[in-house]
Amino acid sequence: MFKFAHKLASFAIYTGVCLGIASTISPAFAEDSSLGIIMRRGHLRVGMDAAIGGPYMFWNAKTQFYDGFELEIIQEIAARLNIEPRPINIPWGNQPENLGSRQVDILLSAREEGALEMGETKGKFIETVPYYRSAQRLLIRADGTQIKSLRDMIGKRVGVVANSGGAAIAETYNKNRGNAIRLFSSRDLDRMVIQLRDRQLDAMILDEPVAVWQVRNNPNFIIVGEPLIPIRLVAIVNKDDVSLKKAVDKALAEMRQEGKLEQILKRWNLWESQTTLKSTKGLPVTVLAIITPYSVYR
Image (cartoon, rainbow, N blue to C red; front, side, top):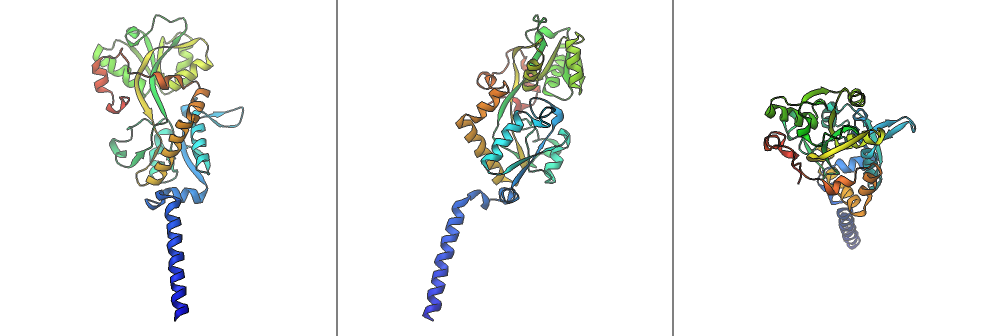
């Protein structure tokens, strides 16, 4: 009897110690199983769209693999979790469905803060802390320096990517100014860049990373004016995957504190705007009121 009681007490102590140790390994595991599943699997499935192009994530013909600043960010996050990143190329519009059906674990693909908190996707996902502050920028030829702001585009031929932030700005401006801008909207970015080069367009309104990338690859292009409609980019996970969100948030916070995020963005010529980004003075109040409310940089 004594031996049994002794063994029982020993077992109770052992169990308590084990439970105590387990409780200190990772409090996040107690919230949900998302991070635990990924850690056991050993890789993070990341939904990205290479068709968005540089410098987000794109196919590098020289290395025969993906490249871009978003890819570098997710690689660093995965390294800090001691797992492997698995970029999965999914058309941008299909990504929320793929995330919701758990074909991927996370989206990191030029996703604007609050953009999925509307319509059919409202309430289905949660966002990580931001990893980049973006804006819309005016891209012109170096010899088109008479254009310095949105107001200077009145009567000009301006290209925008369909359904983009640049399209929203131009369309809203035209709505309030009687179609003052001669607007050309297309999903074919490469074609519009050629049109700008060949003087068929006078300017383009593009996401800042895309505009910077175009200047980097086309020395005859320049960016002018102040940033328009600053907005933060975030990664997206399913609403129940709180432990995964917290792990990604922690990794991003460490990257920011240690200067790793700055290092990545500098490599892609995207760091300077992170400290100088301001709301534009060139947009009328009506534009700011109509364009999505979550676009106000905080």
